Each structure stands twice: as C-alpha cells, then as structure tokens.
Image (tube, rainbow, N blue to C red; front, side, top):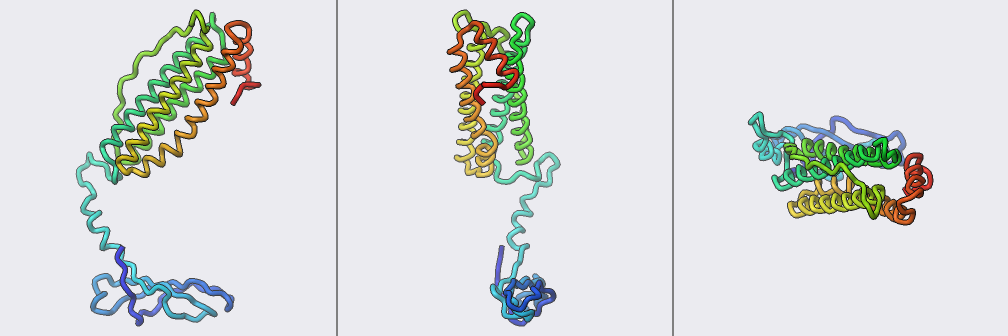
Length: 261
C-alpha cells in the first residue's frame, strides 16, 4: 500500500478514548484532505495517542491510500465465465499434482474396501479386521474429498482419473490372510506418505507456501501416526501366527481392547 505523511492541519472526526486520565490509548482519526496534493484521494487515516481525553500529535502521521496498488490486481480479475475468480499464484504443476494425489487416495481406498469385503465373508468371519479396513477405506475417501475441496478453493479444476481394480483374495499359504493383508496395508500407507511428500515437494519448488502448509497440517503428521499403528499390528500378527491368536487379535480390533493405538 502507498503511504504518505498526513498534513498537520488534519482535524479528527472521531476518536476512541479511555475514561481514565492515567492511561495512554491509541486515537484514530479520519479527516478530509484539502491540500492540492491530496485532492484525488480525499480520505486520510491518521493515528494519534490520547492522554487524559485530550487530542495530541499524530504518532505515525501516515495516510492510507488503498486503491493505488490494487489497480493492477483489478486488471487481472478474469472476465471469462469459465475462468476461476479465486485463483491466485496457483500454478498448473500444483493443480496437476493435487489431482494425482486424489487418484492415489481413491485407489488406496478401493483396495481397503476390497479387504473389508474379504474379511466380512461368512467363511472368513473376521469382523474386527473387516471393520478396520472399512474405516480405513472411508478415511482415504475423506482425504480425497479434502483434496478436492482444496483444489476448488484455490481455483483449480478437479480431474478424476481411472481406478485400478484391486485384488479380491487375500489368503496367503505361509503368512495367513490377516498378516498378509496388514502388511499390504502398511505398504499402502508408506506409498501414500511418499506421494504426499512428492506433492509437498512440488509445492515447495513452485513457491506455493499455502499448498505446502495445507499438506503439512492436514496429512503428513496423520500419515506418520498411521504407519506407526499398522507397523505395531504387523508385529503383533507375526507373533501370534496363523492360529487361534488371529481370532483374539480380531476381537481386540472389533472391541478396541488391548491393541496398540
């Protein structure tokens, strides 16, 4: 914004005063400029200190003229109906990277949903694992939607991509289905974390501080927590083997007792 000294002849039109005479508070005044150099703006805002209810000299002696610097920004406001009005300092590289991350989140959600369907079968009947993967699928969809909302907020355009068909069978002759599925989930969480770090890198390279802050505050910390939690689940399933211990682990997942959180 452009600032210039306020003439000493400006007279205040209103002020904020404290009733006590021993306190020094800011005094704000708005006055109309009459000097020839100020005719085109017409409005001056000055700040002064007031003590004991009397007006004193302006502290800063500055005039605020907001319309000079905004002229060039006004010229940049799009007039085409298809163009975003909110978009500012949001490059195409960042927009494309967000769309790629949306696709990653939906693909991971799809795999988790397939795991939920597998463990919910009547001949598998591990309801704790089914619940865990159903919740995980919903969480990944929420992440995708959060990215879509942010894309729209910045003036980008959401471009959904195709989703790969996931596996439908998760039984493993050596590891068993529970351990195999949980190891796959751990790999998916690490992959998602890597993709988020790539998105953060794109934001940093393009000096998009707002996108970088969004990824840091909304995703990265949560991703570290998810990796830690699922790593503990994998370690516990490796200890119990494929037998009766899997049922106990499943019950703890179902009822939320004794499982690392």
